[in-house]
Figure 1 (cartoon, helix red, strand yellow):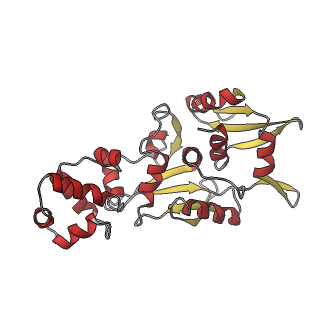
Figure 2 (spheres, one colour):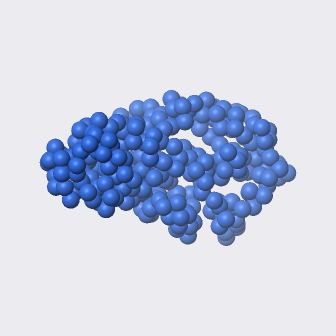
Length: 289
């Protein structure tokens, strides 16, 4: 894991690089939970100077990181437009799994539906960037076989539109591939770290809430064509034909065939029945996918 990949991921979110008395440049990251910053700092410390402080006005914690290359990163990530310095997305930015993980940790979320038959989707905040930068990020995600599209972003404070957020597609399996890229589980060191209070209930949210729960994995896997091979292998292990499995589930043999060959998605209810009958658990599937 390269420290620049961590910093790049944070810069896609709320991280920033600022001038210290016009002479030095420092990377800055804020968070509600100091333990999260200490986890980030532990990975950065071998490469530069890390320090911490606390903003007494709002109770947030702040990490500072100094390294000679930070000045170069500042030139890549910022430019002046009409006399104002703004953050941009570097054309040569590489979205590595580490960069994508730290972007998600800082400015991503998993949106869950009240409808139990709807698949949750990933949202990445990009409201700090201009429209052309948002387009560039979508193109870079597409190169990772991750399909996102822009939606006008409304401030939770003012209710006014202020840039864009990008939403993952669902039916093409993007949500599954996204978590396969960054990790199927939240890093255990920060799972119970607080991200803030959100929602109408104003309840505390944690980093582990950004990852799917077991029942949600079934919904997500229903749109992942990669699951077909594992279903086929398990069916053969049990000595069943496609017709026998289809009869147990209540679907056609052709339906089973197409799901196994990745030509169609199983519905959430049918996948749940298949997994139950084949004796497969979601964790087993994730481990082998």
